[in-house]
Every structure is written in C-alpha cells, then in structure tokens.
Length: 607
Image 1 (cartoon, rainbow, N blue to C red):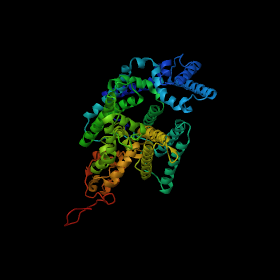
Image 2: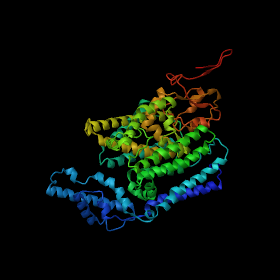
Image 3: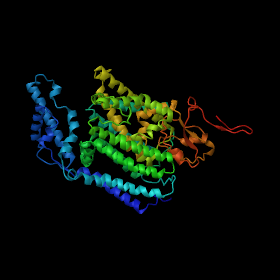
Image 4: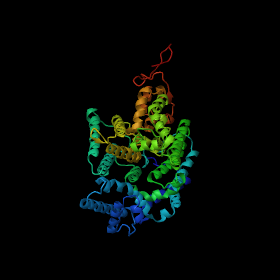
C-alpha cells in the first residue's frame, strides 16, 4: 500500500508543531486561573433588597465568599448551593409573612433562569490568576500561535504546481471518514445527548424534547419504510470499520467546544478573558463568549481561506469566492457589528437573513430596532427587504450561490475550515431523502415559530393555540440554533462532511433552494461527450450530489441543494462542467435532459 502521507517541508513541520502547542495551551487554559467571588459581584445583578439579603445570608451559610476555588466546577457547585439556599430563604419568608403589598409572588421569588443567566458573569468576575493578569500573552500563545502555525503549513503549498491533488484523502487519518454504521452511531448518540440535556435546559419539561424525538422517528419511518430505503445498500462515503481516528478526535473536540460555548460558557471564562482587551478596543465593552466565538471564527476563515486559495488558485472563480467570504466575515459579521455597539447602536450583522437569523422578529429585537432611531429602523427595513425582495431576486438571477457560497458565514466556515472534509458527504439516494424531509421540516418550524412570535408581539397574547410562544422560541433556539447548527453542523465536519448544517438543517438554504429549483436562471451545464467518468466531481461535491450521474448523461444540474460553489468544475480534468445563468428553458429544464444529437448531413442539435 502506498504511503498515506504526503511529503512535507521543514516549514510545514514547524507549522504543525506550533499549531499543536497552541491547541494544547488553549485546551489547558480553563484550568489555569483560580476563582474568588466577592459580595459585590454576587449581589450586583440584583436590585431588590430582599434578594440581596437572602443571597447574603445564603453565602454566609455556604461560605462561597470565604474561599478560593481551583476550578470552575467547584465554584459552580458552591454557587448552585448558595442560590438554592437563597430561594429557600425567600420562599420561607413568603410562607410566613405573605407577599409584600403591591407585589406578586413571581416578582419576589428568585427564578431559576436568573441563575443560568448570571453564572457566567459571576465566574468571570471571580477569576484571578495568570490569564486575567496577562491576557495578551495567552492570546498570542493560543490564537496567535495557532494562526502562525497554520500559515507556515499553508504557505509552502503555493510553490507546488497548481491543480487538484487528492493527497490520499481516503487514507489520511484526519480525512478518511467513517463507514455508515459508525456515522449512524455518532448521529444517534449526539441527538440523544442533546435531547436528554434539553430536558434540563427546558426546566425539566419533557414535552418539546419528546416532540422532537417523535418527529425524528416519523422521518425515519417515512424514509426507510414508506419510501422503501430499508435494506438497500447505500453508497458509502468512507472506509469500512472504525477508522480515521484523528477525524474522530477532531469531531469530538469540536462537539465539546460547542457544548461549552452554548450551554456551559462559565467553564470557558479563561478564553473570554483572553480576548477582553480586543473587545474593549473595538466596542468599549468587555468580551463575552460570543465575541470570543466571532473572533475565532474570523481568524479560522482568514487562515483557512489562504489554504483554500492555495489549493484552488488555478481557478479564478474559487479565488474570488474565497476572498468574498473572507471579506464578509471580517467586515460584516465581526467588525461592523462591534463598531455599531461602540456607537451605542444595536449589534447587527447586515448579511444575516431570516430564517437563518431566527430571532430577527423576536419582541426584544423589534423593540431594540425601534428604540435605536433611524439606524434601527433601517436595520429592520433592510432585514425585511432582504427576505421579501433580495433573496428571490438574487436567486433568480444567479442562484443561491450568491449567498451560500459568497456571503454566508456558515458557508464561509464550511468552505475554508471544512474543505478537507468535503469528500465525506454521503451521495446515496437515502441521504437525499433524509435531506429533503429534514431541511424543509426545519423551514416549516422556523415559519411557524415566527408566525407565533409576530402574533404574540402584535396581539399581546403569550399563547397561540395553547402553546407558550416563549417556550417555542426557547425550544427552537436550543435544538436548531445551537444543537443542529453548532454542535452537529460544525462538530460533524470530520465525520459526515463540511455542509451537514447547510445540507440538512439551514432553513434559509431551504428557502433559497425552493426558489432556485423552480425559478432560478442558474444551472451547471454539462458536456457529456467529454466526460471520462473519473468521479472527481461527485467526490468533491459537499452537498452530496452525484454530479457524475448528470455529467455522463449530458444533463444540466438544477438541484435545490446545489450551492454553486463550483468546485466540481474546478476539479474536472476535462472541462465538462460549467456554471451558467440563462432563462431560455427556466420552466422545463428541471424535468428534461439536454442531449447532444449528431446526424450525418444535419446540424448538431441540443434537446
């Protein structure tokens, strides 16, 4: 068997070593600082004297203010006990003395959600140690050193001849993927884990996790039984057995990162402290876990964007497209929103569109737009205009690629950091059936949730048909906004390919795809006579489209899922595929095949 690794230069080995060191330091950082909470920090979020007094008494019982904790877990346990004691003290006082005049019981009690919303700030304020004392040093040793290592590994690639080289993608332990059984195991385990945690996240409510589980079972039955996919041998995307151990490790690491980011951010306050100076320079405010994420997201897209350019530099379209996602992420998704905050305006990403931006029509967001004056009203008008006019018009003219492959941050991360894993997308008919049910199901859920939100906002009722609008919003944000888009959408890059979220879950991609399928001028044309059936196009299609099937038949590719990345055309050695826009056959081209007919004595015809 040939070697499974490609020859690397000394500079590349140095880059790998620097990146490994940076990753180790980054991983160890949350355990470096100690935590000492003060009374001022504990009581700060509460204005009520009753709440402050209860917390002060509870703190004296638990001793949370009298000792330093070596880990966030120790501080978390002490804070939970303190808050629980304070709740008991208040409830006992209400039972003995009644609710104060002019108040309702819910106004006096300490709600559970308040603890969840404040624990990260408490932990951050309590931090003492090396990271808090010297954040710049830790930033340079982690994000800075990691970016430098990545660039040192990438730069020598520019000296190699341009063009696609497979480089043992199905042999490499990072990019070879998993077979069907192991992919199924990871998906099932992750879904069960997210739903189980959802019970706690939903305040011990089983209803919405049960609804989600029921919908998942229904889709399984529809695809496997009704559409007769059970028992058929699927076309596999990876090797036999459990393999690709580096890919598994990387996937688990990404899943763990997103779990901490979304649902346990108090355990990563050391990372947040590290980027505090940068946040204060840009907006004047201290960093949050979302600023940390935005900064890391931008660095990754910039560094891996350089890699993308080095790999596809023989193709001008790919270079322009990569430069576009790097620009939009840096300017529109990161810098401009932070500058807006510095100017006391709402944080707003002008390229984010509903229903991907699922909370755009939430009550607090609409109130924020209206209270921000002319700028806020422009943001509101701009967001609505994009949904109603911008999306259908642009997709009609150039396809969904204008957003999914040139603008979107999710797509930008998938195309840069996720490019080494694009070949792992499942090309089977079964996967396509799951894709259609799931992504359109998410779109329906987003539309229903938004309809309930607007009804509650303008109608003044917190319920629609007996369902609490707030709980539906919370459910959607937890399962779709965090669990699907983050934990699965990015964590599964090394396990199922780089466009899992875009292909199976993104409601905006579903909306764009419906317009593209029926009304877009965009298509990928094929010259079947030149196709040598090498399979490069299908291998590199991140959306799971069997492009070779179309190319062999000379059939245009008009698929709702196609994001127009153009990589299939970039890797074709014969120039069979071409990205085009035309309205000549817009009404019937999705159903008819274009076949070249050559007859002696007659002109060449294309049908």
